[in-house]
Length: 398
Image 1 (cartoon, one colour):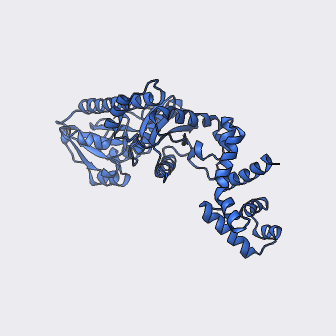
Image 2 (cartoon, rainbow, N blue to C red):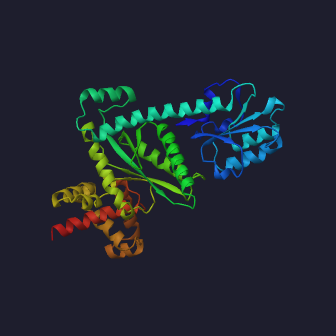
Image 3 (spheres, one colour):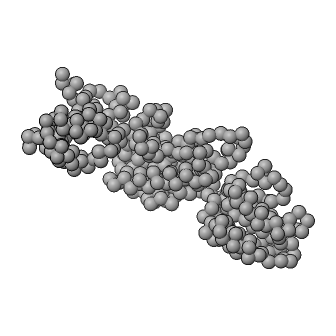
């Protein structure tokens, strides 16, 4: 992945940034020589545009209009060369680039040619692709390799700064796409989406390993107890999907497998996430979360994994343990209260009436439930999971 900042860092002779530094992190997918209109027949999102003011096809006064149109099409940066350096770029052009956060480069006529720029950027993109492939190969071998030796693990940890003494988990980002009339443009937009996603993931704290595999995006990261990476990933996907380049066209959702301590088991985490992909539309997700976890699917995960009764019962016991222990120690009825509140449609008056308690007493119980379980009462997915656990236990012991 290459950005306009990388082009600036090439320090090519005769090439200088004159405005629009706020957009230096725009991704460059390739270079494009602006010659003929209509631009939308040739221009792809992420192209670094190069324009020659030759006083035949283009004049200095044409620059603002060309810049505005190309920016709308999603160019990453704009390089302008004026024949024989006869004029300087106007303040209007520079101010416009600043407003658009569009990196604007001036290319001296006797300096680097557009061919030099094109070759240098192309070489940089190719080299970056090779580096990305190298990381992808390591991750692929971790997930699907038959023999993950200690020496191989040591090599990976040394090169990528990973700590496999802690549990890691796999995430699979699947992309929902809407196709328009121009399928070629759709493919370029999808490719650009992948580049943006790659850039954002590599900037995440903890730097997950990342690869593109079979039209999916796969990452491996440390499974922290505070789920900081999962929260960061949620915000990242929402931010990308709300970008005007992708809104209503492309959206991503990440499915997470369970955490595993040993590298030889990371493939299991991948398979768990993969098994949920066909069921993604059936998973309870009222808040439309972007990150869904196999380990957070509650009792539903047993339906997907053909769990036995003991496994289901163990899960239910663990989920209700704090409430049941509190009820047993204090002679209270928190479990019954949680169920009754659900069965009465979360209506406090009806619930209090059924339980023969004052509404203040009911509120006290609900507060205690929230405190013990660290539960928000409007987290309906988790609430329903607890209700299912109560009913499963009661049905199993009928």
